Length: 189
Image (cartoon, rainbow, N blue to C red; front, side, top):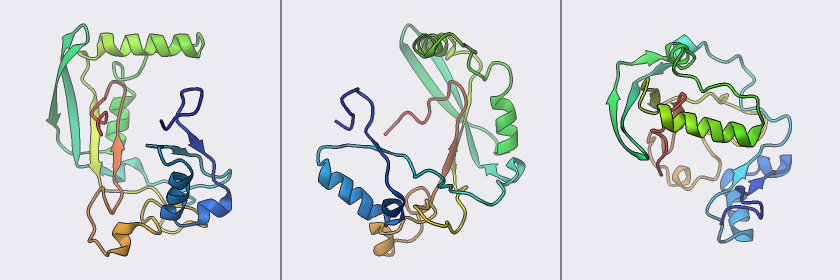
C-alpha cells in the first residue's frame, strides 16, 4: 500500500502542465487511479523552484517553541520528556545542530552499511546530548508568487480555501519544523 514493487513509497513525477493544475485536482486524479494508495511522494518537474528570491538571513527567523527531547531507557524501551525552551533564531538552532554531539557519525562505507551504522549509532546515543526540535514555526520559505506550480502558502483548489475557513496555523497556513540529529519529536501522525 503506497509502495511500489520494490517496497519504496510510490513516487509521482508530474509534468509541468500537471504541476500547474490546482493541487487538489492532481491529488484527486492520483487517488482515482490508485484508490488504495494511503500516500505518495511528488517530485516536481526539473527546474521548478519554490524560491527565486534570496533566502532570508537565518538570524531573522525565530523558532518560538524549541523543544529539548530528553530520553531515558535502554534496550529498545525509552521514555521521552519534551521540554520547551526559550525562543531562538534559526541561525542559533543551526549552530547547535552542527556542534559536537549533535551531528551523525560520518561513514563512507556504502549505503547499506552506512544505514545500519547510523541506526546503531542513533539508538546507542539517543540518551546522550539531548537534541532540539523547532516546532510550529509559522513561516513559509516559498516565494509569495511562483512562476508555476504548487505553493504551500496557499494550495489552489483546497477545500478549506473554497469554504473560506479562517487562517489556522499549520492547517490553512504553512508551518516549518526544524530538526537535528536524534530528534524524533516529529515521528507521529
